[in-house]
Image (tube, rainbow over all chains, first blue to last red; front, side):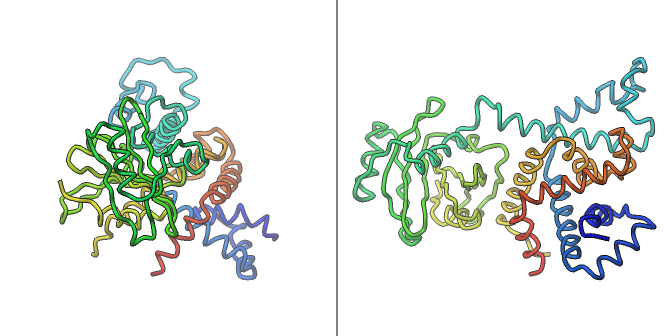
Length: 272
Length: 86
């Protein structure tokens, strides 16, 4: 048996679907082939991760109700005529719950896809993050100034003093403020303070809003000491953490690992 | 049991997003067997009945599909396996 021939059999073994006479042949090959033993372990790990991802996906209640009340899926509840539906709807009652689960997963994945690709109004927090890519490609008009105080002054003036940037000090992370920018998204002004240094690049967004501005898919954590909710989300390889201070929303965004960014946000956030 | 903490939830959420992103990127004929068998707990025979194709086709598409997903996820799978060993 070659390694290429073993590949499909490894898949079936992982799923406990490999029977005689193929199983003993594969087991013999695995004893002799370290590469395929490694492939077997990798595929087992992958299956576990995909299964775990499924546990995190939840279809909306509305979608769930639509599927569970759809007469095509529950013909016994309606007087539907038999026809093409028979070809996709299993006659076996044991298969129907499984098909429903699959349909829920497929629809959930599809809705995620549609939201990402064709969504017309993404959350302001997600839209704001697009400035990060614009800055890295030198397409973001920024105001460069010497010193944090000068940048802060320019940003405050840009919004007529109605609110202020957070003005966090990240010098301990080897990050210094280098520029500021103003963006108007969905009719709201967003102050952007840009920090750079040996610690990389970090954006601090500030705008008037509420915690409802956090993306729905964000993971929420409550810091019991500071009594602040933190919302963590990722987009386009960048991590972001949102929190509220009074009526102002702050988002820290960076390519640094999410654990570090979350810890940083928690250390800097000030209770309202 | 020790509370895994918020960072674990963040990583789990991130991994879920990465996996669903990877699934979206692969052709639907490879995606469906993964969704049915890995996420929906179908057997090969059940998936074959619903998709109206031979069991061998399910097995080959699943194998190919997982390899495609794996190519998108290699770094993440490595991280998770490393964490389990701690």
